Every structure is written in structure tokens, then in C-alpha cells.
Length: 111
Length: 114
Image 1 (cartoon, chains in turn green, brown):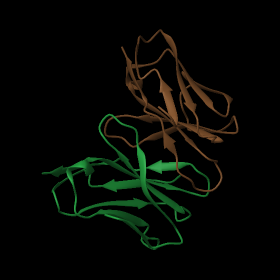
Image 2 (cartoon, helix red, strand yellow):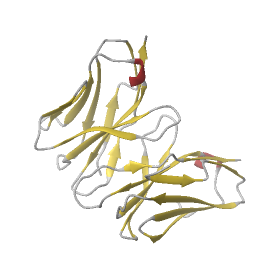
Image 3 (cartoon, one colour):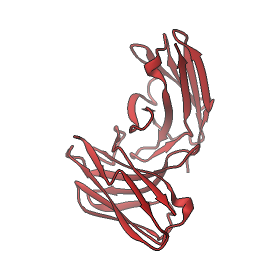
Image 4 (cartoon, chains in turn orange, yellow):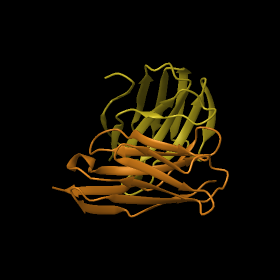
């Protein structure tokens, strides 16, 4: 099956700085890559996703890039704010809606 | 709450108890999922249902038994659990199992096995 690895496991940045979280996947047939944000004590929520026919997608301060050749994708958050502090999970899926999740990155934005 | 709801939110049980977790989605979705979330581990997919049919069972021990009586409800029946089964159990739903679409998560049930 698919194997998704996520780095770093923890990330601490100063407010206003950028944060980058990276994931790799093993199955070249994976074609959908969502990112979920989970605030402390709350449910995971989708923040952005990208499909394999697109190399980059942006939504305000959040962007995701995909390199199919290298089988990795990254989440970029610019101008970080304290409310961005959460655990972020990447995932990959192949054709059907079965997600393989990474182990999560705990982002701490210091005011 | 709207969307996906789960009850109970917290559960403490002994290893000999039998209990059930309940999930309900109000989104008109056709696919539902059970995940286990343990500390410092990836979200682990346990079961997948599509149109009330189980389509995935990820080598989950038989002490976990899912039930999907209709497309809006999903249960996870628990019996003779082990302390290592203590975790947050998340339910999710999506519009369909085919293609790729957003999974909407419930708030989870925090399970502690003594």
C-alpha cells in the first residue's frame, strides 16, 4: 500500500515568518493530496488539496506544491499568525477516497 | 453540531466491558470511515463503508466490530479491549468513495481502556 512520510514532526516559527511542511509518498499512482489542520482538541479539517494534474495551488496565505517525479508535496504558509498553531497532516490517495496520512507536524507560531 | 457528530465524546471502559461508539452524518454522504488516532502516529484507517457496504477492513482486530445500518449512521462495537486500544477514534464521511473528495471528520471519541 501507499506510505506517506511527513517532516518535520515539530516546527516553531516567529509570527510573520513562513512555514514549510514536506511530505513524500511511495505509490506513483497516487493522484490526490489533501492537507488537514487539527487544532488542539478539535477535529481535523481540510485546508487545501491538490490533484496530480496540477503542480501548485494557492489559497490566500496557504499554498501547496506537488512534484510527481520526486513523489513529494509541500505545504507553505506565509505570514504566519498565532491562530495557525495546530497539527497539520498530509495525505495521499489513489483513485478511491481512501487516505493514507502522514504522521503530522505540530506547528507553533510564537507571537 | 451539524455535519458529523459522534457520541460519546469520552469513554472509559474496563477490558471486559462491551461498549459502542456512534457516528452520525447529516451531509447526505454515501461513504463513512473509522480512524484511530494515537499520539505521535499517523491517522490509521480502520474501516470504510460505501452505501452501507463494508469495502475495507485494514487488518483490524476482531475486538472492533463496525456496523452501518444506513448511510447516515456508523457504529463501532467494542469488546474485550486492551490498554493499547486507548486512543481518539474519529469518524469521517465523504460524498462518495469513488474519485477524490473531502472527508469531513467528527469531533472524535476519546477512549481510555483500563
